[in-house]
Image (cartoon, rainbow, N blue to C red):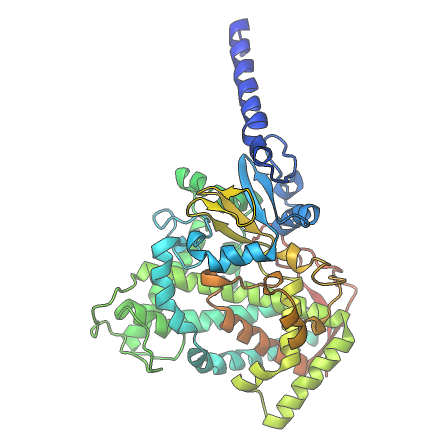
Length: 512
């Protein structure tokens, strides 16, 4: 039996008392010292709710609760465990950090370590010059010309999705549209990024689908550590993604590249463009397919196979789950608002009849579709926050506060976009908020679901194209309504950073 002497008990008590005093009166007094409004922390979680760590609420719910309490302040402070985190609420300050003074806040500050986890060395996570180098290389992949070439691939897979949905409707009138759409986007991204048919529409348990789900399931504690204390993961040599997930996507990419080289296959898709970066260090600007046999290299900084695989992986993650979730939430809102659904279907029907089908240009020009999508992204942004880290000390303009070098910053995107001061009755789904006149009259920085500035989502155009294609296909063929299985309102999966519907989005689906 463990026994302690009075002397030992004294020193143990003294150590605990010293730690408690250090936390309470020094670390947890940071914001008070600078007269920054803040939520009172508790030891040892700071402001992290216990329900978040228990998996009962989503990360976005945690941040939204802080924003609602302090939204009338330009900024406020919170504590994640022992770390002070600055929340920027004011749209003009957001503009400064994201755009005007981007050079002082260029990085997200998330965990990445290519040695521990090769799949973490991608555009979304990399800092500084490493990120800048890749951004320059990958930007030409997402031009309108390149996306127009990929449009037919997406249309063909959308036809397969309709057949899959028809097959399900033979046995039920209620469909989990989130599942169908995630399988569609998985097939799309696996095809154009990996050159493979993942067969997710045919098999809901396909390996691509199951590995994709695992890749985005971090767990509440791991998510906070990756966001706000990445040095802990480096110290403990903990990978961001599960080891079998990283290994799967690294190997599948290498196999895809080797197969295309061996069979001399060339397609105008993402994989061909990424292979150009491996072989020559640049993407051809003339919409021609460069030879990808590795023999015509010029003196450009080329990608390693691991770098290419990591970025193929992040394109997969960004293209499959966020797009399917956005579309699912959109269909849910249309089911709740039949008059909006009817108006959008009328626009789609008119375009299809007038052009004998949908084209890349016609989808981009549908105004009401664009308004419906914008309202969906306002109400359900894929990420609840934008995250930045200060590169050096930064005096916040027109305040007495200085953001210290290394301080982590969050922009509460979901809270801002659902603030009734910017969007009256924010729970109401109203696409008319996004008429050209209303958008022009509103501060841009109260609705930035893709971010802004240098770190704006590089795949924004592709994501919008993909969502519009699948929405037009679904709404041209089906009518959606609420069923007894529909969760109203939707709840978010708590293990993910992105806002994904927990237990799916079940809707009644009828052929038109």
